[in-house]
Length: 205
Image 1 (cartoon, helix red, strand yellow):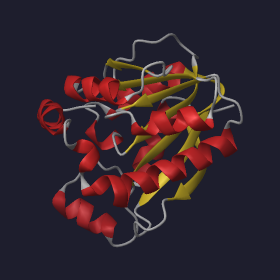
Image 2 (cartoon, helix red, strand yellow):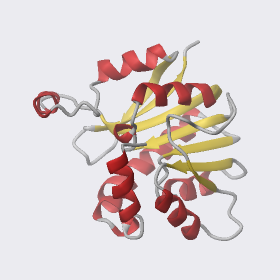
Image 3 (tube, helix red, strand yellow):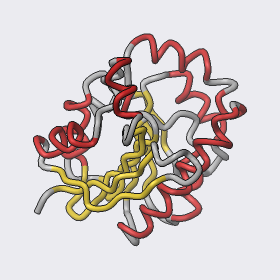
Image 4 (spheres, rainbow, N blue to C red):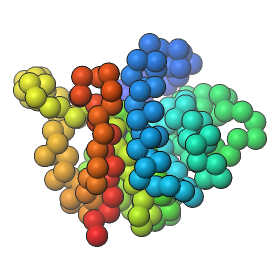
């Protein structure tokens, strides 16, 4: 993340974000799909990063599933980071900090799993963010990229409305290839009309 307007909006939204209807009907489904695919792709991750972590709900679920893993969440909205810290029980190993996808403050090849759930379309520079994910992804690691990927007639709606922040699949694959990444597998998020997919992305061999 993100454009300045987006950051301002998420800062204002932080206190009530977890009570929004989208949590139950969209984000919970996306999170379950991401965690299921993550467990299939990387059995015992030692370090997990969530880019655009919001209030930290996904990482708190990941803590239960991947015991012992280092868990880090970053968000461009300072109020989201504060809300995540306040919502996480004392003694939890999860760390949250303010940072953008385009400038991740972590060493290279550090994370076995990187999550981005419905945040990619907010990134200010998707190509720069992709390059940063490629940099911090450990050998054999996976980036679980979940977002709206227009398919069928929705592709034409996207073009008419010029929703360029939601790339079509071939455009996304070109950006990934430029950073040395490729899609290994994918899964549709159930109940969302097939428009939201989770892509397991890895460094090309």
